[in-house]
Length: 193
Image (cartoon, rainbow, N blue to C red; front, side, top):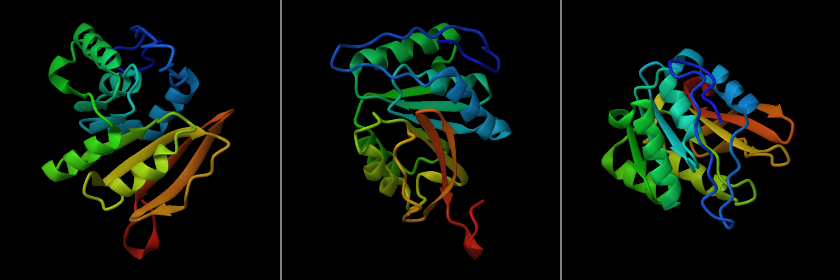
C-alpha cells in the first residue's frame, strides 16, 4: 500500500496479516482517495481518530495530508507494533498515539478525559455489527468537535441508520462493494452542516 497524497505521497506502508484468524481488509486506494477528497482542507491542523486502525494506513494518510495528530485504536498487538514502526519511518512519532484496546473501551475513556476529534474514521469488520454499538458512544457530541465529521467505511449491502442520538446521516458514497457514509452532529434549525 502507498500513501496517495500529501507530504509523504508515494511512500509505502507494509501490509502484514497478523494471523490467519485476523485477516486484514485494507481500505482500497480508490476508497481512500475518495475519503480524503471528502475531508479536503478540513484536515489541516486537525485531530484524526482512526478506529479499527489495522495497518494505520488511513491515519498515516491523514497526517501526510496535514492532520496535526492521529490517534490509532487497534486491538491486535502486532498491528499496533506495525503502526508504531511505520510512524517512526515516516517521522511521525511525536504526532501519533496508539492504543491497543477495544474501540468501545477507548471511546469511553476518551470521553472521560474530555478528548475531542475533528474527524473520526470508523472501519470495523464488515459483518461485526460494531457500527451500531459505536455510534451511540459518539452521539452525545462530547468526543466529536462541533464541526467534526464521522466517516464510516462499510459494506454497500448494509444500510446505516438515519440518526443515532445527536448524529444525523449525510451522504453515502458507493464504490462497488464498499460505501462511505458521513455523520455529523445535528445542528439547530434541523440542518446537518
